[in-house]
Image (cartoon, rainbow, N blue to C red):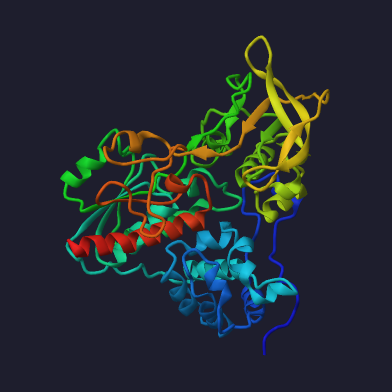
Length: 462
């Protein structure tokens, strides 16, 4: 009989006043007993609505059914038929707006903790299975993947399983893309990402770092080198700024740079000589997951006061509810319906304050959210020594400007078919944030998986 408990089995976490001073993972994961208890809440619905909410179509009821029986390796096999990065997805996917939002249990009570169970299965496999994936027999064809973020790694893994010789070209010195440089250690431990990457290497995927495609080698040159198709999954790593006065002052960071210095360059560790300001009072501008990551990271670097400055109300914040909740627990101050207008500096060009204005919500804009309007005479100044701008990123223009025949839209995103992920250049496919602009890890993975299917069909037709 199903467990009809109306709430999810709680997941153990570090206490807020402890975790806000370290970079260890916040959530500790389910024990076996907890996983069995939560898995038994699944009703194993015949129409499987949860699967329709998963961008990579994991057969969720099937893997949960194996968890109920204690068959964790069988559950892992089902997940990895659809996902190359289960330990990652179990931690950072917004399940509450995807698979869990479709869960029948969620109509009257809390949905099944699908993400928590996926994490448990993936972690169990990593801790108990020492066998590496077997490299499939070669089919004699070569494909290049540009970018080793979630879309690129997913595409590479799916093609490698079909026997393709896949080479991934990564601009940074470490593979993983946003999983390595963007998401903090306390949400996604890098050893987890590295193990997932090691599994792809075991499948035969060749990952070449320090390779800036568009500079070191062009897309056309990849075709000349014998690659029969190219997938572009370069993400959206070009930070947006507001264009306000003072953004060039010392102490103003894009969230992209701030998090890269912390995550990829290990600025939070004393033994790493990474240039970074350890501010005492920080303003983070924005309301998405990246803003939460930056704010929570600043706390862990020793900041005494961290402010989230967001021009709308909490209801309009795009960040996950869990991230907002964790940030509040850890002591981040939320200054909602506030908007920055100018960064103030001293005679040495260093940040000393952020001038803001109060806002009120007016009529809805094109996004459907009520447009914020400034209140006259409501200006005030926050005393801060660092400002982190977290209002989104755009794709880097290098690939599209060095690849004839590759079209982009007015936002700088590569134009690709929504179904096949084919671009306007023959043999070139693209997906993830390079196509959509900044979005979620799992949506990027879904695009990479679809592109792999399309690339396989394209090459087999030739």
